[in-house]
Image (tube, rainbow, N blue to C red; front, top):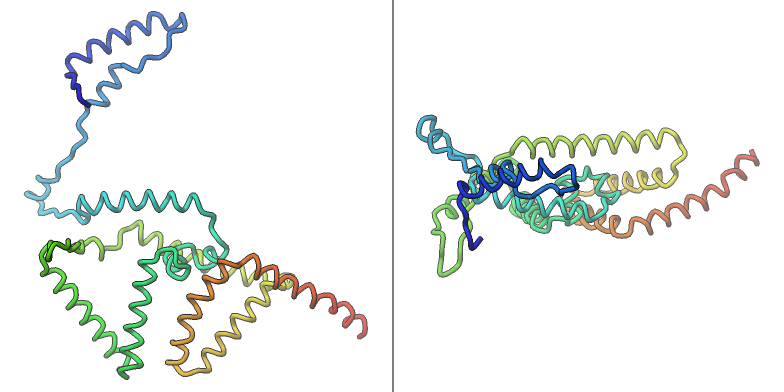
Length: 272
């Protein structure tokens, strides 16, 4: 604000306004905006310092102020995006968590990171011919080397700002752990729901989807590890994304196929 009025000046005025309201409220006077409680609320200092905890207890914040503000802003935009879009059946099937975000390309940065990691794993395991332990050791070594070099870089290199990785990026908070647990439990509950529907024996579209999925798994398992990796990983990413995009059309086609098959079922039973 361009004009700043001290609290010592506004508080007496607020008391006068409050007294006037109490005297004339029975005659229909509206509730005033200027009250002592509101003045105390607006003038209260809510800035907290952890300097004494640092000096006496050696406390170090897990999340820096800059990173905390960034996460807060991102969480609000994420919540707004979730409220605006409807959750698809594919996302619910995948647990509506990080797995769904990755496979359905909801978070492009996270998806590209996972794809890059899978490419590195493929190169180390199959192209170079290393064992799993050797490949993982080399991947961790490259990761440690990257983090070390990145930490040595200055904040500005030839006019380009280098964003430093905060230690909090590698910390799993209780909220994130809770989200992971909820995602796992949601996926398990979805699987249990599928099994219950199959046990009832009246959901033909679901039965055909399960049969198709198991058929794909059996085909991939019959291949070599390298071929299954090259075919299976792209198939998973493309398949789930395609099903999410055209799930109504696919469900309609499966429903029509089931209806066509069920037309002949009573005839076969009666002929026996």
